[in-house]
Image (cartoon, rainbow over all chains, first blue to last red; front, top):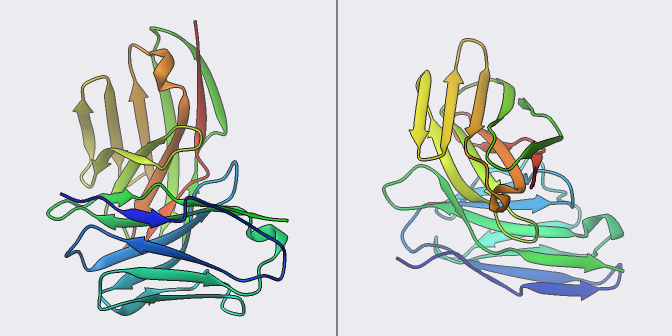
Length: 113
Length: 108
């Protein structure tokens, strides 16, 4: 089965610039997660989708972050404008079909300078 | 909300056994997961417990006590490649939340 593809793998931007991350999950699963992982910390859930709908976005800084899921498959996460504290790895995850655990993509490492 | 606690760091010798504890408080419970994460890589799934008791998978075992809000991951016959961060994660009715992770260093 296909995995979770994320792009880009690395991104360096200046503060106040905008950036977008893309995730293509295992085809067919309704649930998709975006996590932010700051160095030395555990992943923090930013947003969870069920098909096209948002299940939880309570920890998403909505003044600067936005996310959408296109036709219940691909998803994009955007930051506008970026701050220094947004430097982190952004991980996309989805359960494997028939399994309960979340399967992670390789992530996008964002550095804001 | 959820509160998940695990030790920050542990060190052990190659060939030894290490036990990583995780305590949690959650408004609902629908499973506890352990993940391994090597530096610079994504987390990879190790184990899943939803009922009380011990789940064994080769050198790795995980235990759950729902009444105590407690789990542990047991790593046996430690190898150098086991040096990594180990993440405890709890799922409530729908959300999967992670602890801060325990960095395990295996020394020769």
